[in-house]
Amino acid sequence: MLDATPPAGFVEKTPLERYVAPLKPSLVGLSRGELADLLGGIGVPAGQRKMRVQQLWHWLYVRGAREFDEMTSVSKELRATLAAHFTLARPTVVAEQVSVDGTRKWLLELPGEHEGEKPHQVETVYIPDDGRGTLCVSSQVGCTLTCSFCHTGTQRLVRNLTAGEIVGQVLLARDRLGDWQAGLPAEKDGDPVGRLVTNIVMMGMGEPLYNFEAVRDALLVVADGDGIAISRRRITLSTSGVVPNIARTGAEIGVSLAISLHAVRDELRDVLVPLNRKYKIAELMQACRDYPGLSNARRMTFEYVMLKDVNDSLADARALVKLLKGIPAKINLIPFNPWPGSTYECSDWEQIEKFSEYVFNAGYSSPVRTPRGRDILAACGQLKSATEKLSARERMALRAMAMTE
Ligand code: SAH
Ligand code: SF4
Image 1 (cartoon, rainbow, N blue to C red):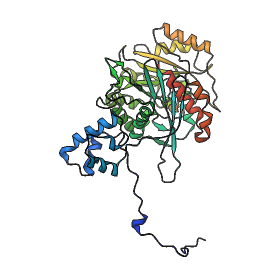
Image 2: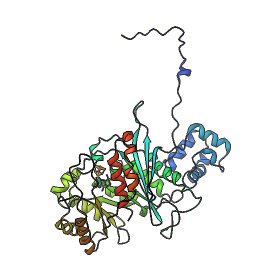
Image 3: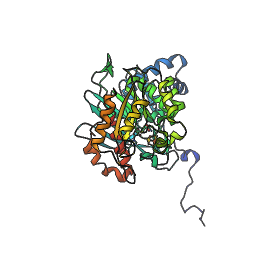
């Protein structure tokens, strides 16, 4: 039994002494409306809020401010009040790896949801390529879906990321890369002009369309022309096929879409991507055809993981071409990245080339990228004890690399 008698000399603390101030929330990732409400809460008069929000937006997303004190156009007094209530914090980086080819990986720690819970970990990967740079961003810790070739699918969902944690991945990548050259736009006349992070792919951990609101809110912040200003065309959201949210993505976010197809027959896709049992290929393809804004200049990407003797025959390639008929599409062939315990093998290189040639001859661009950042992937083991998600991270980097075409 526990002895409830306090030890000698013990002086009980008053409620005030016991009070621990709550953690200050970060302003990163909030909408303009949410920022205005918070400013109202700390006494900024209604007539000033719009202008103050515009200032905060500029400092956060154009200048990359990490401290309120950097915001020299904001009065000292307001800066102090802001700092007393809020932060500009991004997710915490626990490890960073830099490849000889410039690829970078950050292992991030996010707070657990309950007090005393261990922090969660996700990764963000940056891949520079020929004047542009693609950032691969995570939307969830783990995933509720159970695609049979995907390591994330073996982990139970831990939690959704908040909009702030999603935008935070973009900010911290730009912090680490020194990508805040004041005033430099992400592109001019459609081409990158010196910024390092020019493209975003939602292809990290998680199914973005099962965290729709946070992903939407975050991507609207990233695409905002007065802030980070990465245009919607340069943002690609990858989904395993959450059909009802595909139309919403078009209407409410308007970014480019990538579909993780991986199989052309329902019997096989039911096994590889079990969500197919709910939303069949025909229904998925209809949602793709209905996606707004598709043209030859703005194509939908179809991802296809190459699994030896499972989905890599020329008959599959033929069926794939037939299935995509009429959709402005590009096909992204991803070499399968094995993980401990996975039951699949990556297709032979010659088979990938034959498959790729077939779809290319049918008129589709079908990049198969030579994996990059190999040296840092090899060094991943050093992070393993911290995260035990080595293969998930490797896979994430690989597929992000495949997307940089
Ligand atoms: N959940 C979303 C986005 C994250 S997965 C989706 O499924 O689309 C991003 C891409 O990586 C998907 O096309 C996914 O099928 C693919 N992928 C997952 N595991 C893989 C592996 N082991 N090897 C190669 N690609 C993989
Ligand atoms: Fe989830 Fe995508 Fe992996 Fe499927 S492939 S389990 S949807 S992360």
